[in-house]
Length: 123
Length: 262
Image 1 (cartoon, helix red, strand yellow):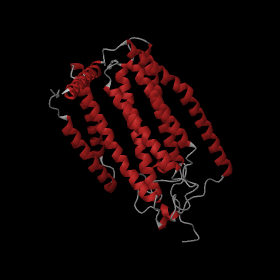
Image 2 (cartoon, each protein chain N blue to C red; image 1 turned 90 degrees about the vertical axis):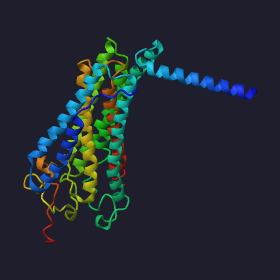
Image 3 (spheres, rainbow over the protein chains, first blue to last red; image 1 turned 60 degrees about the vertical axis):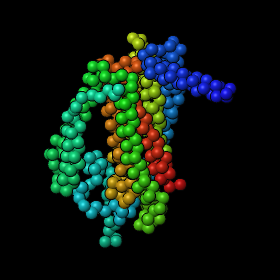
């Protein structure tokens, strides 16, 4: 009988606690305690500090690293990279733009060949 | 008691527009450019504008209680989940091809002779990863500044971080477009080109969509549509931006980094 009484008390307490928690969740959006506002402000300050302390140095490093690698690649490959096998590059159906022979970004920017003709010696 | 808004014509018009977009695209690829494609594209764009304008106006009328906002958020989360499985399908195809490379490719990935033309993962892609992760940091900072913005400097700081986020997104897109233009590979470069460009191309499209979403919500923020406790539009755009960031992390690790030769 004592156990049943204590069990009833525990479930009642849990129900009251969860009802209060739900009330807090639903109402806290525009009724805020000073502690809540302070914690949000601190989090905002933390994330803004992180952008200058973590994100900005990483961005600068990323930029420097990219420029270095690109420079090294262009120095070591003055004639460009070795082009892939033309066999896997054939166009069997024309593209729906231009004369149909150029992939989209080759057609738009005209920078590097993206489709290669077969080697003369083979055909 | 559910707070259900009234009847709307936009779902019907939107679905008609989506159907016309897809079928006119197929017509374009087989028979040359189709003006119906342009028309249907603007129909879908118009649906987005008018439908979401209706939602915003319902908010001003008082429908957006705390519980209703949770329904809006659930809708946005479900949409993002659908995008997750959308990318999942292309990742499945990519993994199918790269974990068991066919004889035609030389039983290796990247295919034989592709080693020098694939993008160096620790050059531009690493910078792009850092850019997107930094934009995730700035959008979080922006969110917390908005949460405590009450006629003080925090509103202005939130706007500044928001602008930085959009700027970083645009820089990312600019770098990707430059990579595509400078590349010696294209969509038809064997299955590598197909898998790589469908994944990175759709990701770039989603970054564009995310940047446009952030910009539109930014405009609404600047015209004082939001309060520091009711900004579901911003939260949705920010979640979408985090999703785009996560997809890029998967792309960077599995497509750029592990898809490159050792």
